[in-house]
Image (cartoon, rainbow, N blue to C red; front, side, top):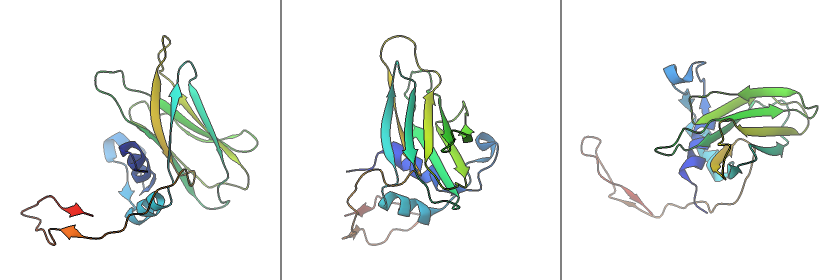
Length: 174
């Protein structure tokens, strides 16, 4: 299976460190490329959709206790439509809110926390879903663990074998 742009976006944003509190003003942090590649190869992403009239999606997961964890949900905006607004919340086994992200101005939400032993519940809510007709929004989540299967790529060749930064060209990996 091929990874979608939305799934790649979820992995990349989930692999950032040191995000600023005002992310629209200061950026998303520093990308940990090694972590992103590990997450992609481990298939630490999944795609689903919320369809009206339901406005929520839930998933249960059991993280490793004591190890800091980030969970990121992303979606793509469509031209000519009111931007989707999804909110993200995580609850522990006692149904206590562990963390939430309710930003209205991004096409992603991210929660970082250090889990205690137990099963957690992630809740995604489509806050501005239309109230008429049937609509849906597709999203991707990274950080919950393995979500599917993907064939790990093997590099067979690179063409051309070298490219200079001052004369960039298309590079083909097969």
